[in-house]
Length: 373
Image 1: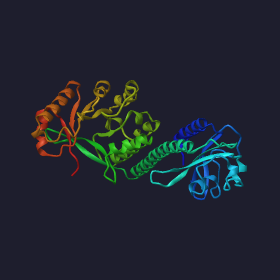
Image 2: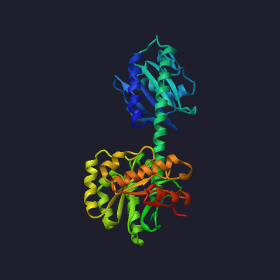
Image 3: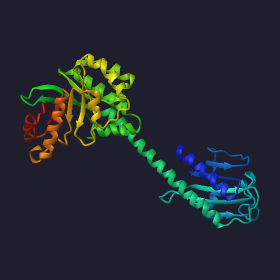
């Protein structure tokens, strides 16, 4: 079925080909079982059909074209025994006819692209049919491309539904590097299929459901926090999520002083002044702000400059294999120095080995997040 974008483009192409061929009517019919439906129509005469109308496929010019009974070019319908007394010859007033099958890339017949005149046109030839055929190929490419996008979006929508149903929250301890004291917890969404929250969020945003996923994870995080005693919990949010009216209702369940809001370095902030204004009342009540995954390579330093975070959190890709990579150690140390200069804690994410942990104090990192075993 032609969707909105493909329908608009197809209608324009059908009208162009009608005018180029000098005919009065051109249309696309789609074959669906024993019916044919009109998906695009360009006409300069009144007709008893319209876009969206359908009728039995059997006995139509389209059926005779796709079955090979009828030639693709009929210069004079009154001179052809198959069309002379056919219902549509009189019903639509067809004097001359062109029609070609439209095939999907799989070879399956989609329908037909047709054009006709109210009068006989003896000059029509296979050259005009080739114009229709080439146009039909272009339209089918457009249709299949849009169908592929629609199928992907439907799959993503289903994936988001599944993620909302099965999202669980892990609370990872954030530990002081010097003595191992747990100073806070990081909330991480866990999904049944093992996909990361960032991947799931990226997919949800493709179908306009990113905020829904973020706020669902936030609500489940706060429910988990209420069940255990943690001094502080950090949650990943975007400016869009904070702008949503539901955000205020959700965070009312937890004292702001127990909340740290993390902003990913990859998230685009269109209006920093608005975001700062949204954060201001929460920060006055004790909430903290963190910039997440600094050093990943695509980090936007404007987050640090504009948000004045309480914590800079170093991406796990940077904090792994420090003993064998002086460049990584230099990068970690530079981020730790930046954190100190802006009066922020420096937190290393995803520290999985004791060897890497041993470098943290020397490089200026104050805290680490170690994954659950």
